[in-house]
Amino acid sequence: MRLERHNKIATIVSSDFKQVLLLEHLGISLVVGEKTVQEVCDENHINPDLYLCFASLFHNQPLPQVPHFNENDVQTMVRYLQNSHRYYQTERIPKLQNYIQILSQQNQSQGSKLLENFVQNYINEITEHFEYENNVVFPYMLSLASHQAPDSAYSVIDYKEQHHNIDEALADIKGLLVKYLPINEDEKLRRKLLNCLFDLEHDLIIHSQIEDHLLIPLVEKFEANELNALPNNNVQIEDKKNANLSEREIAVLRLLLEGFSNKEVADKLHISTHTVISHRKNITQKIGIKSLAGLTIYALQNNLIQLTQP
Image (tube, rainbow, N blue to C red; front, side, top):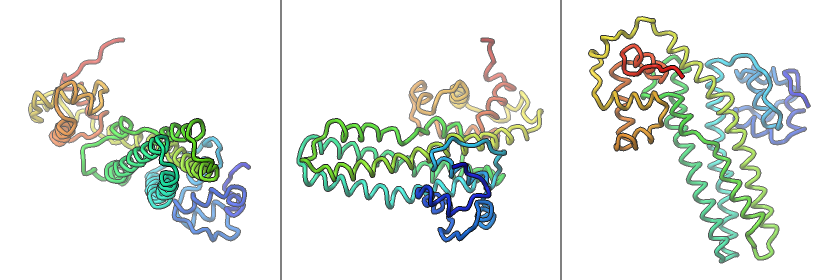
């Protein structure tokens, strides 16, 4: 089924019940009557092209070619992701934990204990990931989309360094269940647990695709626009003295601009990652530039780095 603006929402949901989650994550009531995608999106102030991108992912279709998204679309994407976080943490994860608890009670074996550890480590990992997005990434993106100065020295490049597809670790857990773990012939429990894992995996794959292919590229454009808005003569060579960067701050800046992550910079300079982040915040406060692209221009104009021919 090709998804288009004139399609009725009820028809789309009837062909793929998982679309109900999409409506819920976007804050759209399921009572849609005979309304089309265009009509429902207009009522809820959502870009219909963005909605169709989401619907295509839920329908296991490739992302369509769409017009350029804007600041309002960033807000819609962040709202979707925040609501999906709440859904995972209040429904998906507790359901998974419940099955694991039943399994552990019925199977006092090394294999079930191993599975329990795998699942708990995974839950800890994705919980930490969600907290990082909610507390650091999303506020930065919303500030940038609103043309406001973010509260912290940050760039979407930082997010790309730390961002990873949180669905990948599920493969090991599923493999353990399918290939190796005996569950005292309780195949119904195995099926329920696997079904829970596959549903979670489906959701998280969509979660990652929205971030990787829609949200991050859009925010990168906003960062580039912020850089282009700077006058060409905004940073002069003598500004190096005015900025008064310390030798350690310059060392941190050079390594960051070479593409090293915060952790790699910390390792090279034998300092903590927290100290690197503090140095970076001080740098951006002193020279008034937050994005790595802008910092690169500053460093070139102040002879802190040089471009070499390949």
